Image (cartoon, rainbow, N blue to C red; front, top):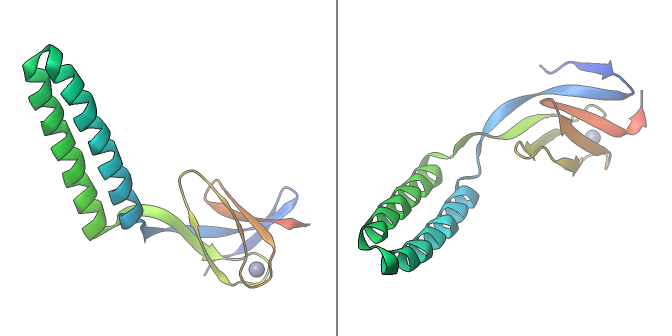
Length: 122
Ligand SMILES: [Zn+2]
């Protein structure tokens, strides 16, 4: 169970890492890989071996994207209970985000792996 404590001015609750975000990471990886291919095509015009190195790098990035898609990314989300109403909330961990609680519409901010209810001062 996640305990709710007043930390500073705001009530906050603990979160735990949750897997996910595979598709998002996959798309990001493919975008990076396409950039790597473009750059290596340009550099390959100057010096051929750079083209192959670039393609190998792009292939590795794509492979990483596939792994993320299939297995998910560890600790992509932080999940916990809203410190105000205990509704389960999931927030993207990196970068730390703010989210509106679906239960009580309070503004929640993820900071230091804890959910802070910034709508009410404790
Ligand atoms: Zn809530």
